[in-house]
Length: 297
Image 1 (cartoon, rainbow, N blue to C red):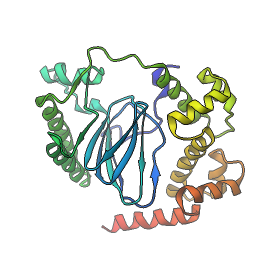
Image 2: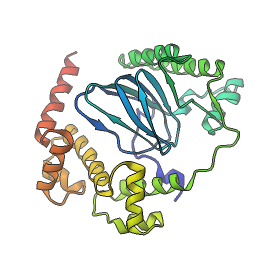
Image 3: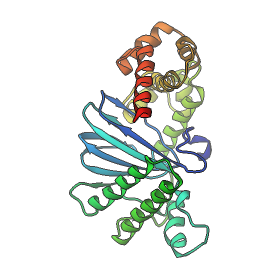
C-alpha cells in the first residue's frame, strides 16, 4: 500500500490557509487515537503531566514543554482532567517562497524532503523554550482575529520560529531520510484499513492478514503498540466519528450510530456514555451551549 493512501483523511484548516488550531482545557479525561498525518504539528503542553507516544516510543513529559510532531510520524497523546494543552497543525508548504532563494534551497526544501526536521521537544528549562513559546502564543493570538492580516502574521511567526531553531542549531539534520521500519509500516496499513472499513464489521482475522500475522500474535502486537485492544480501538474510532456528527448536525442519533458501524443502538448508547460521560443528547446540547457562548464573546 502506497504512503499516499495511508494518510489521515482529515483537512486541517482550509485550502487557502492550511493551518488549524486545537485546544484542550482539561474538562475530563480523553486521548487522541494513534494516528499520523502529512502536516507538521506543534503542541504546547501548558499544564500537567503528560504521556504521549511518538514513533512507537512512549514519553512522560512535565509541563511546560513544546512538542514538534514531524510529518508522517505515528503519535498519540493522553489528556487528563486539569491539564491544558493546545496544538497547531499546518502544511509545511505554506512556508514556501514563490521566488526560489537561499532559504528555500537550504531550509524549506530540505524540511519538505525530510532531510531537515524539528527537534522532538523543548522542555521548559531548556534553551529556546521561552522564545518558541512566545512565538507560539503570538500565533494563537493572531489566529483568533480571523483576518487576512492575522494569517500573514502567523506565517511570519512560524518562519521566525524556524529561523530561531536554525540559528541555534536546534534543527535535526537527516543525511538520508530513514526507511520506514516494518513495524511502523504495518501499523499504518492496519490503521488505514480501519479508517476505510469502520462502517462495517471488521474481524481480527482480516486485520491479522494485512499485518501478515496469526490472529493471536496480532492481538498482542496491536495492544502493545496502541495500548488498546482491537475492539477498543475500533469502537473508539467509531465513537470519535459519531461525536462529530452528533455535535455538528441535527441528524437522528440512531442513524448516526448505524452509519458509524454500531449495529446495536443500546450498545452504542452504553459505550458513548462510558466514553464521554454524557448521553448523545447531553453531548449535543453541551456542544450547542459552548458554541453559543463563543459566538456571544
